[in-house]
Structure formats: C-alpha cells, structure tokens
Image 1 (cartoon, helix red, strand yellow):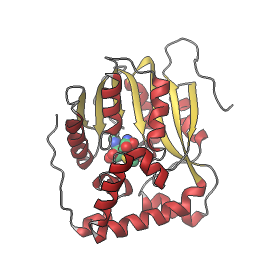
Image 2 (cartoon, protein in one colour):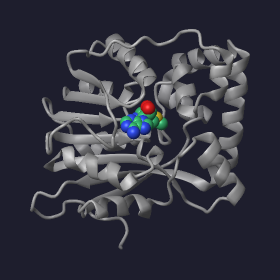
Image 3 (tube, protein in one colour):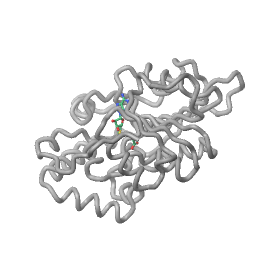
Length: 277
Ligand SMILES: C[S@@+](CC[C@H](N)C(=O)[O-])C[C@H]1O[C@@H](n2cnc3c(N)ncnc32)[C@H](O)[C@@H]1O
C-alpha cells in the first residue's frame, strides 16, 4: 500500500485553485461522478461481479467504488489514480473500510497502465476519460488490460443539448480545465474504434450536487459533515458557491451515461444496443 500524506490544512489560495473533484474530495465527499451512486449501481448490476474476480478501477479518486466492489462482492481490486492527493484520500478510506487486503492502490496513468494485456475480468472507469486529451488511446488502454470476454465500464458526462458557446467554454476550460466530451455517440464510437462492438449505453441522470443526490450518495451524516466542512472556511464556501452557480447554469444541457463494453472473445454479442450506427 502506498504511503501518501493528505494535507489537512490547505492554504486558502490553494483552495481557490482546486478543480471541482479535488474540492469535493477535500470536503470529504465520497462520490464524485456525474451520476452519483446510481452510475456505480448500474455498473454493479451489469458486471455481475463474482468473488475472487480481478477488477481494475481506473481514476479511483477517493476509493469509494473500489471499496464497494471489494466489500460487497469480494473481488480483488486494483485501484489506480494519477493524483497523489486522491491516492492519499483513497488510502485513508480503504483503511477505514477495513478492506486493505482486498485492494491494491497504485499511482498510474490511464494512458500507460502498468499491467500486462488481458489480466482483469472487469475494468471500471468513472468520470475519468473526459479529462484525457487522447481519449481514444485511453479507451484502447483500458480494453487492452481487460480479459477477452470481460467487461469495461465507462461512466462519463454527455451533452444532451448544445449549450451556448460561452457556457461551454466556461465549463470545459474553467470549471474543469482540459475536460472534453460530446454526446453518448462519441463515447460509443471510442469503443468501436478500439475494435469492440458489443456495447450498451445506459443513461444516468446528472444530480451530483442536488440535495436529493447528496442525501442518496453521502447519507444524512455524510451530508451534514460535508456542509459543516464547507462552512468551516470562507475559501471553501466561495469555491462551492462558484461551482454550484456554474453547474446550475449548465445542468439543463448535461446528462451522463454508463458505457458497457464486453471485450471481444470471438463469441457473439450479448448486449442489445440502444442505438443504431
Ligand atoms: C471526477 S474524479 C472521479 C473519481 C472516481 N472515479 C469517482 O467516480 O468518484 C476523476 C479522477 O480521475 C483521475 N485522473 C485524471 N486523469 C487521470 C489519468 N490520466 N489517469 C488516471 N487517473 C486520472 C483524477 O485524479 C480523479 O481522481
């Protein structure tokens, strides 16, 4: 297990520069993806995890999904993230959940995963590929490490209506610098380009920061702790108000999906596609 120290008192200037997911992680939020726990539950239903399966969670953030897969389904999970701060949060959460022997936590980049071909039964990616410049290479890499007949699940934002150009610019370049995504067709295409055809797209509502979404994802005590932590510093309050303001403006144009892809093993497709290409 990596040893990473999480800074407990962050200077206000650093808080003002935090990207949204680092901010939410610093405030103790456990679920940091557009569809909240709903997206993970969709993945769990489709994956039909079996004990002792090898699972890779790419861009694991604070470790919530890896912990669920290990504790609920008994799988052996490798959780990887590029960001040391996230690894630190994940390490602490995995320890608290008592599943250290079930989860191997590693620093790594989705574009260059340090694993051989075809080693994982299931690969999960939640709200990660949208931050990657070469998304085709990212998906190819995730598919590479998955066993033939195994599954790759990718949960990402999608535009459901074209937003005004200035709003889109603000969202892509200021809210999450370098973020980029289009429609569910674009995500599906990335899997098609990687040579996969057995693909299902499941729509998941975007309600990460609604009160209902907070309660569902963090529970009552988690929501109260999150609010208390936010209110504890002016820099947190300002940054959260800024984030909520932008997300409220952009929410009518946004939704999210889970893309489920069964890696080719020479057999026939098992998913019924929801759209024709
Ligand atoms: C929006 S957060 C999602 C975290 C987690 N998957 C979840 O759903 O709660 C995006 C995560 O992707 C990680 N990330 C960004 N670029 C990455 C890369 N190139 N390779 C691996 N992880 C990356 C970030 O550090 C962050 O933890």
